[in-house]
Image (cartoon, rainbow, N blue to C red; front, side):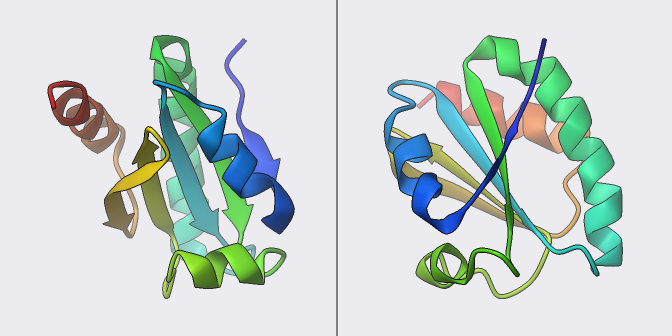
Length: 111
């Protein structure tokens, strides 16, 4: 079954570093954010489609995780950060469509 984790400030770095060769997708959101609700549906679809293909997914609530939100300079939500080998390789701001996830993952795997 495909899943994602809701991370706290003190869990994010370990989640990123323990991924080894997998891509890591962090979706920063807030409960009061209208576009985040739309993005959540697309995120859930991406989790379902790509988590068995070497991609790890997690969500970060900016209200509960101010330190990591600040560290990665997340200034608007939704913001999606993608990491590979513990390096930030892509920042997507706004609602991310399922097709966009697929094209970004394909581009990153070809590097």
